[in-house]
Image (cartoon, rainbow, N blue to C red):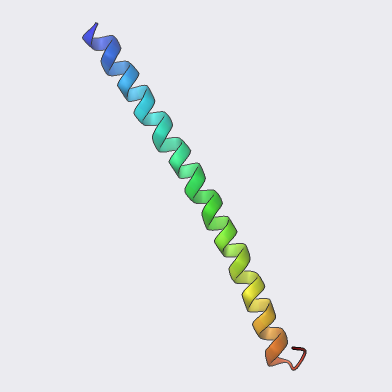
Length: 50
């Protein structure tokens, strides 16, 4: 019974860790896209298209 409990805890911990990694990767991509838009707008303003 202890072995089963340990395996269940390990499985739950692993699922939590993996989902957190996907969430952070998605957030990182969103931040990167926003940064690219800001760079594009800054470049447009620098070129006098603002």
